[in-house]
Length: 130
Image (cartoon, rainbow, N blue to C red; front, side):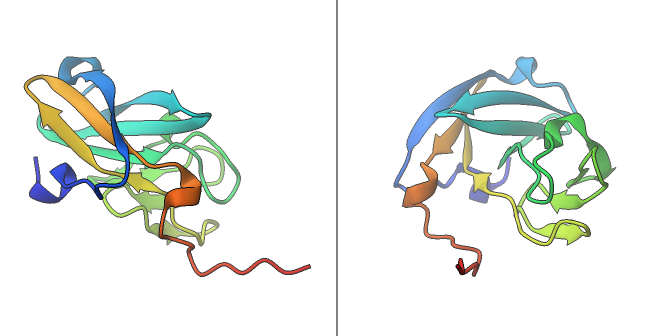
């Protein structure tokens, strides 16, 4: 478990995902918080990362994709790649990142820090036009 994963932004609330053994090694478990699907990925035995489970290109479930590399998930619909550690879009057709969430482990329990979208500081540099 990396230190950065355990640091929360201090703005959200911690939501229990479940126990570590409920998340398959090199797989994911999805929870829904306030209508937002969150995929919690387990890389190896002890690394956990959480992302919004919706591709920014075409709204496919990223947890239904597959690992293209150790920390890279491939969208099952059109093949976009995302880094599950940072949310960065790595391959077209996606150009916008996905939201990430802090993860913490307490004993065998896994938690994600939930912050509603309107409270996030990230705007991705997008400006709406009429």
